[in-house]
Image 1 (cartoon, rainbow, N blue to C red):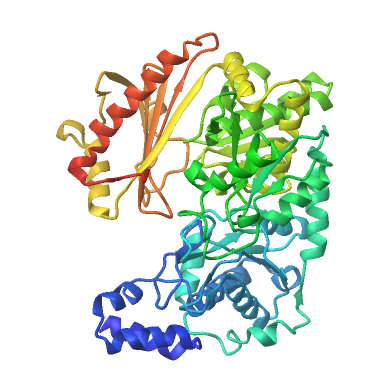
Image 2: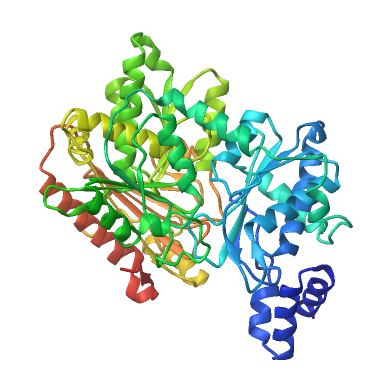
Length: 596
């Protein structure tokens, strides 16, 4: 009965003939399971906003669910800001499209704008596709109340998403997500003018920030430009939005423009040349880039994900093979470079005490090692840039300088102008670092080794298993919490490796803290346990917020001077095998390994 009610309301409230037709076909064919999949649950609005497949029904991204979400968000903002109708919002979008359901990022952005305009709220709607970082930049630059980016980043082509930023220029954190979710539930029926996207586009309340923000953004990141040189670099935007913006960023830095991978430089929602549009997946996404680099004589490849907020880098080795750097290695390189540039510009040694770098708790501890030796501050946050962005804003408001932040999932914040990961500014800054190293007859690979020799080797190995069964996930983590059949009792060893500390950010337990109470925020809705080992190893096992994955992150942190890399690598490899076999038990739990 509840399913029938949702279907009837969906058909009555929707003005999209394509999704209506898809639902009617399912009803006619008696496709109960398919209808249940579409209508039996509503997408859950969280701190990451929404992300789901495009299609009909309450569990998918479509015109109606975009309107419902925006109505709730609009109501919540009305309650939160007295000057909301003076300041307004910004809305950006990528190039995603789903022809069967008529879903398109641009269409969703226009509908969201119509909702706000129907309530008399000024909307700054980009007139063309834009990288995700431009939205938080616009929020901060124009002092707006909020921002929305319609994107599914590097997810499969059928997906889309709705990402939300608060007035501080960072992604929302709790309790805003719960307040917005409640407001959505209270505003499900479309308001009379919510479907009037065409009328909204003619409204005097609508402004296009594209030209001004394009100018101001590149002006802001130019502050981080210190060296100029001519080096051949290849860039791919993987059929996303990044091409134009990275070319402009290199131009702003007075660098030789990167060679663009022709087959991938223009936005294409089908992502025809790659299996997954995610540079994190490594070489498969970069095949065409390597071929172009060979042709042009370039030794470095830069790759953005489709919404240009992440950056991957690969470098040709003397052997002729290509090395794709891990997110942690790039974090080490960019962190070293940002500090080196700061030091060259600041002669006052005391100023270092005002400097901060941030990283998520599952990322490498290399910045901590650099901070200990160089005298600046390092802080760890929960996983995700929403935490780093909000912490950065707090520090900036206290007069501190946040020089750099990163997460191992190839996300980098190299400028406080954008309080989120930004693959555009990171690409230009990386281009400059590569140029500088070339003048010293050095390379990225050589510099990573130099950093590890000076501050201690930090070797990491991260991967994941796919699991669609929530019961399996729950029991796997509960087994770790109930070691030996005892509640709240954690393992003291994993194979031959002794465990010295445990932190569980699902329950709030931390054996290293007074009263075993964790300092970092906890969340019972997501699983996350970190084990520290006596040999200097750290391993975190967690669930993904946006994908059906159990992720694991491992790192072996050696003291400066311990440069027996072969031994360190074997020790880390053995630790990973033990964690997978003893803690994750993939055969028993029927976990699918990461695709090769």
